[in-house]
Each structure stands twice: as C-alpha cells, then as structure tokens.
Image (cartoon, rainbow, N blue to C red; front, side, top):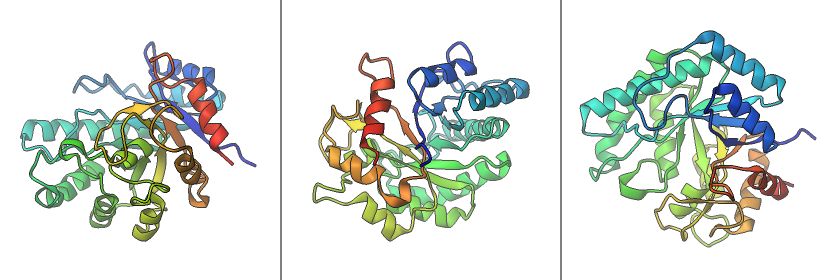
Length: 280
C-alpha cells in the first residue's frame, strides 16, 4: 500500500531547504510553507535557480508534495482598494513561485466581507479570482480554504466554495478543507450537526478537494473561533478524524497539519505520529 502523504506547515527560516530538513526531522513527507514573510506585503524575490534547487532537494529527501500558504493579510473582499490590489499582486506572485517548484497548490483564505455579507461580495470575488488565475498563468492550482466563520470570514459554508468554483470555471481553482475551521463552523461527522462528508457529496466537491488541513480545535463545535490545537488534545472527537481521514474519496488527498506543537513551536513529530495512527 502506498504510504499516505502526511506533512506540516513549517518554517523556512535559514533558507527553503531548511524547511525540507525540518519536515524530514518530524517524519513528514509533505511540506507547506509561506513564500515570504507572513507579516509583510513585500513579495519575495523570485530566484528560479533557488526554487528549482528546492524542488530537487525536497524530492531527493522524499518530500514530494509541496504547498504554499498565502498570507493571512490577503482580503479580496475588502472595501479598501489598496488591500485588494496588494492581495491580487501577492496571490499572482505566489502562484508564479509555485510553478518553479511544482507546487501542488497555493492555499488561500479569501478574507472577510467585513459585515457586508456574502451576497454583497460574491460577484466581485468571481472577477478578482479570474484576474489572479489569468494573470498568473502557469499550472499551479489556487485552493480556497474553508473558514471558521469568524468576523465575516468567507467560505465557512461549503456551498460558497462550490458556487465560486462553478462561477469562475477554471480547472486551476480547487479547495482545501480544514478540520478545525469546519468544526468551528458547525461541521462534524458525529455530533448531529452538519456532516462535512455528506455536504461534500451533496455539493460534488470531491474532485476539486486537493488538500486536507488536519488540526484539532481549542473551542466547541460551532464556536466560529479559529484556534488550532494539537491532535487529540482539543475538542474534536477522535471518531471525527477517523471518519474524515479514512473516507475512500480522501485517501489520496495530501494531509497537512498546522498544529501548534507540544512545545509550542509548531507542528512536530508527535502530531505527525498521531495523524498516522488515525489512518486505517
């Protein structure tokens, strides 16, 4: 049986190859990174040779599934034109970086409608996502991540993701399901709430689901709060993880954890081990 792809979001402080070293150290075979400082709008300079070397180094070290996570500063639904323009520019930049090392996708939170509501934001989102995909070119997918729903964050309802994928109509647009965010938005396979697996089936979202973010939650079901916890230490029942991770249509989807780590320094070997123990 092919070994499941289980990795983590890790720092690349000291150079991109250091991220690979950190992945190997915690027995991860996938890696998600920020392509630049997570606290700055300033794009990282593209150095093709460095990015291609990173791809080879990762491949040689059996880390063959790579993702970029776009900055949390991004908000395509903002009423601030400068923020929208910076968001577009940075997403295009991330997608171009991803092309140089065969990235499996750039994961993005679209942002918040800031109280204006989904209906007031959705049509403009179509135009902006199309612009990002057209101007970036290349092959790297753009993956919309579901949100916890806090403060007007978009895509807490999976139906919104389905609608955007349909309306944009580009094969490069997919999505990423985060277990902590889903739980916070009221999705659970076991707690008599909305079952995410049933909803994904109803919305026909299997084929466009390209990444699973597997994180526990510090808060109760439906809290709307995005606070990750280590696997098995939070409020999400073990059976929820078992059902999601072992669903037949998700067995080939790469898993990335963004757990805080048992020492508070980010994803670690124990979280990777706990995820693997949940896999059948």
